[in-house]
Image (cartoon, rainbow, N blue to C red; front, side, top):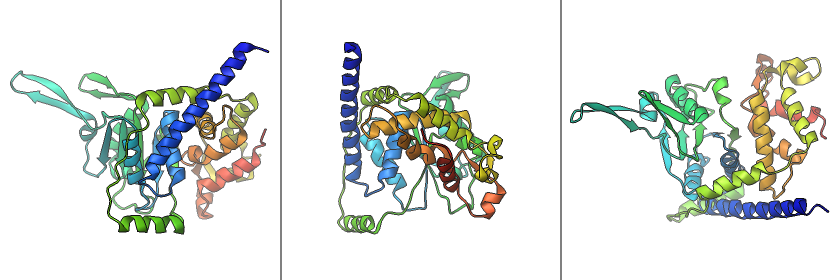
Amino acid sequence: MDRSAETKGARLDWDIKEAGTIIKNAKDEIARRVVGQQSMISGMLMGILAGGHVLLEGVPGLAKTLAIKSLAEVVDAEFTRIQFTPDLLPADLIGTLIYRQQTGEFVPRKGPIFSNVILADEINRAPAKVQSAMLQAMEERQVTIGDTTYQLSEPFFVMATQNPIEQEGTYPLPEAQLDRFLLKLSIEYPSPEEELSILRRVGVPQSIKLKPVLFRSEIKRLREIAASVSVDERIEEYIVSLVTASRLDNRSINSYARYIEFGASPRATIYLYRCAKVHALLEGRGFVVPEDVKAVAPEVLRHRVILSYEAESEELTPDDIIDSMLQSVPVP
């Protein structure tokens, strides 16, 4: 028996057990304030561990902002909330140069984007220039003020919210810019039992203070552990097959292809691969199985599969098409 391989496997098992404890502590701490919404909380933690940004979409009153603020308190990092409005300017986001009369020089005043955890509240209410500045910072993780470029500190994690039912006075994010988000989480209504618990909790005024249980060094370590999760070649091929099934080249093969205007790009392949690893870690495994890929596919692909007019006329959603893709692609 290869002793080095045995030692490496034992170390990975220990790392996964340790990671599971840290993640459970974070979830339990958030649950002290947020009732239910476990899929939303897991999705936000997945975004942090996968090193990507998350877009949350849901009707008002589903605790999107509360969950994000609670996560920021649990994570030992700087938190900034930006309320997006139609009169916002890029300088309000990234900062600008200020003239100092005493010295006769311009000095930078950094904007609220210089933080670790950013809540971009109602991002679709900001005009195109502000959205572009935000999404550029998300992708490049740097900001230019005047002639100087500043690197954003790590971790840098953006959680944006948007309301799907009210479109007056909004600026919908272009499809190409939506691709910058690692995940798009669709937030559902709570169950009757959860809503009763919310009602009873609100009926008793209390201030629930959360303590930080997820530290920056641990985030870095958890990302390293997630990266070490193994993926079989057949799972890799399955991920590629799933993403390519969304493209027009397969129209003659897949009956659902007529409902797709544009499919997912290779960035979706990379993100699906990365999120499947994190999902396996959240499940306490050191290897990826097809169920991990299936579990994260809707969140990774729903904002990357652009529907055709025919799909809209039949009132189909991206999730309906993704479900058809999952059923049509052979599972290894």
